[in-house]
Length: 492
Image: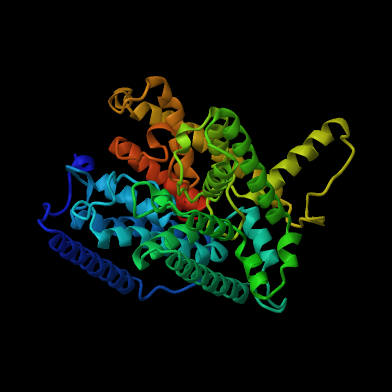
């Protein structure tokens, strides 16, 4: 019964009283978090020795779980509503918190614009989880994430800095570099959005959602609320930047732009963005989804950038587009941005290597004596494990997707689609898009979780499944998945 109990204080009268209660809830959450931190520090005061990979992976996975749980407290203690007459349950609060920290941007809240239901302080905290999660992933990615990850190996190879740096100092240099770039992008975007008419509150929240590729907005209809081409294109450009390898952005800061175009991953990233946009525009115009070429560029480019970068902002109800357009967006969920960015999903670099491996194996079928070396940008990849790890990663993603898809289909009753005015045969695709959207950190899916819908109607156990997938996708599977393997915890 714990899954369905509404937590929090009863609804308070008057917006000022509600905001005061929300601030008290935030203050209480801070006290609880600091108290827990002090307690953990006390019990760990005598810890000595080196942090090995197993301990590091456990620390990362458990830290993100703890962050999601503590981040849920403000939603619970403030009595935030997920709908007009429903307080957020424990499952709702953990879902919203995990979605924020992991940069997924999926939500269970149906009305963001009523301060009596969702206090402004809670709305800001909701967006701030994006900022904290994006900042955390920047630091953790280069430090201890990416076990078996081609992305990390290749990203570190691109990192600037003298060769005499040790592994540890190089990692610290990368972490600080990425942090300053991350903060700089947030600052610049906030200023640009304010110059275009946004309030400081809206500009900060949408900046947090853009640079962390999260997608939480302060309005029900997302970025479409502003009816501004300028704001939409500004956010779209910064979504593309946020999903570029931060090592390459550092090269831009050093005024070495050639490094950007010389990078094979970035070139493929731009090619996918341009080709997918042209594809969406062409079929959208053919099927009448757009009123003209200008509208197709405006909505097509923004939505492709939003889904490809796993941000999830919306300026158009893409769930009403033609089936080819909707299918293209669904496939883009599994692409993602570049390694070393705030993007989730598989990432461009793995797709490049996967294609090369498939071609090499196909060629080997008719030329078994030919020996090829896996290369990237004309340079051989020295680590022999990279190719195997890429294949394993694709296999894990496919296995997790299929298993979760079938499990969600079992958990969700067919009647839920009847109630929402959708046909039952849509359930299978809606569940698939929900799994793809949460595993890849996109947020909105198709059908009952489309651009103008949300996740509030799912069963509590389904929401916990989504939380599990969000964590898996954000931490690139291994640091979170190993927490559920008994052998991981046994002494060796």
